[in-house]
Length: 295
Image (cartoon, rainbow, N blue to C red; front, side, top):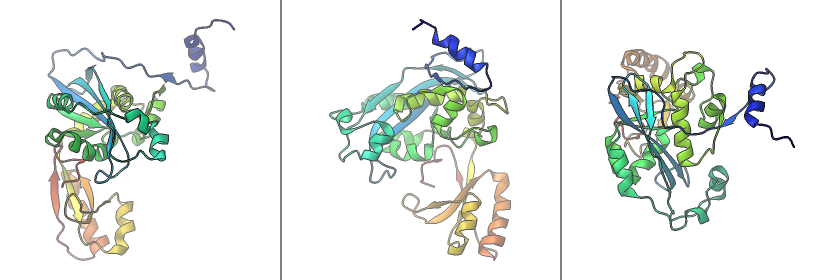
């Protein structure tokens, strides 16, 4: 066979409308010149677990990636990642192994370095996870200090759909022409930082700029307490989620909104759901509580 540089072939295919080339993601350390603006410390976190419920399931792998960012919304640099397996008390089910590639032999006798994790968390001004509503509930059991940090979500606080892109991490990476080892914690962290650093196709803003513009703004959780059962489909269609009360001690449908939309939501609930002038509870959600399930 001829010894041909594969990048030459990939470049040629890229220029043809009938082909689309995916390249292996190569993590980088430098993204932008810091300039003269204030620099903060971020931390991207990813977990692999034995299931979806933090009450019953366990963390089997953690990935942490420190990075620096400018307050104007630019990612500056990536630090040294930390990754570790953790041997669970229970079994790793076959479906988890199929998804993550992690089996019982791989995690045997492994333990996370909790003191190192705490040091990395302590330095962070902002913690980011792709689907923070899942990761945060597990992560705070691993490192309780995470409960005192502001969190952001690269899945829900970046308008991927409005940009014509998927929401799953591997789909977004593919949209940017990248492939990587999905469902391995450190690889997921590095892929998350890379996709956040790139300009989006419609707005031209980076995902991180979108995320940072929302990360520290409070939201208001409207709680449809004692909503009629027959209204559940209407609530789901409007974006409400079910809180089973295990974390908040109050079973209800809820929706998080910016302050300026709360009044409109009250009017909708009273007209379409309760059909009377109901008293509707609302609580402020800060980045210190967001995605935790505690509010």
